[in-house]
Amino acid sequence: MDTNVDNRINILLVDDEEGFRQTMAKRLSRRDMVVSQASDGRTCMEILKKTVVDVVILDVKMPGINGIETLKTIKQKYKNKVQVILLTGNAAVNDGIEGIKAGAFDYLTKPVEIDHLENKIRQAHETILFEIQKQKEREYRLNLEKKMINTERLASLGTMSTGIAHEINNPLAIINESAGFMKQVIQSPEMDSFLQKNDLLKGIEKIEKSVKRARKITFQLLGHVKRQEESIGDCNVRALIEETLNLLKKELEDKQINIRWDMDPEKTTIWSDPYKIRQVLMNLLTNAVHATDKNGFITISASIVKDDLILHIKDTGVGIPKEDLSRIFDPFFTTKSFDKGTGLGLFVAHKIVDTLNGDINVESELGKWTCFTVRLPNYTKNGNRTDDIKGR
Ligand SMILES: Nc1ncnc2c1ncn2[C@@H]1O[C@H](COP(=O)(O)OP(=O)(O)OP(=O)(O)O)[C@@H](O)[C@H]1O
Ligand SMILES: [Mg+2]
Image 1 (tube, rainbow, N blue to C red):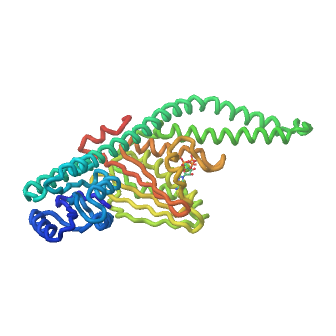
Image 2: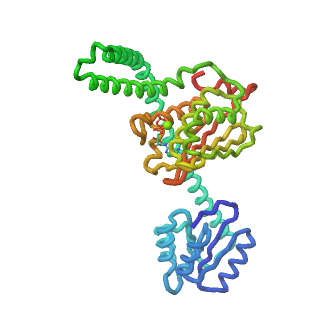
Image 3: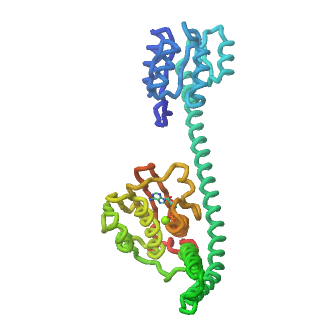
């Protein structure tokens, strides 16, 4: 059963006396309430299952399941989403007290004074709205905390890993140079008589391959820190996507991947940092191409909503298992082989989008599709948002 949040209160009147029910229903309807009726506890539970009800007005004395039992079942199933007001006989105060203990909002004795009942109903409804509000706040806080923990974790990992990347670059260059020198020496004619020449060459090639991978890692990690050019300006995202696809042309053609566009080309320009956006596009589109099988589709859509550019990159590829969705933005998380992936593409994309004050999200269905959504704020020339870009 859904909880109703519009202004009209939904009442369920449960009483075995038909005449009383009809009269009350009419009177409450006149006071702008939506009234359903039930003649016993069982029907009451059936109606609750199918209809939106805020407040149940429940007669205690009924044949079959009595009011108190019905009240207990309602509270067990719907907790504070449905409030119950009990109607007791004049001499049955105990029933009312027992009802309050079992979770009733209040009890009224028959004959019922309609204004008094209306007041009670409105008060009961208020508590439901208050509960909904509190629940929303709890969820919002929980989400925010989760997001903050994630962002902080990524931020500290980012600072640490870019520092390490920087330190590693120098020894890497020395290893690479030395391996090159050793290769040269081994390949010289004087070494032809050396029996383990080929084994040595294989060893050196392994060193070179590993250096290449390590370089790819440091390049990704430092790429978004060391900008090739300080730049912020008109940024035609459609044109940037086309440039990126052009760089991926060979793989796109080999796999005969179809690109579908869904955007108004006139409405894809924002004021932002094209270098940063290009790197995000590169990382996302490379993943999409990797994930998509032969003859698959990549759909790219963009639109400006309020001041933001919303970009969707959807592929009909292998999809992402649910248990991996929360880890794909972590540094070094990869499902690819040693020479194919470093697990940094999405980590870096996330960091860049974060510095542009945007956000990036993913949805996926395993074996069917994956869709990345990126929101990029438009930094207007005249507004002061340009100054807000983090780290500028
Ligand atoms: N479009 C996609 N479809 C399916 N899985 C994806 C997609 N994009 C990312 N992934 C998953 O997320 C993982 C992490 O992606 P990420 O781009 O960070 O690293 P990578 O592609 O493995 O390596 P690289 O550092 O070379 O980009 C991938 O290994 C893959 O498992
Ligand atoms: Mg990648």
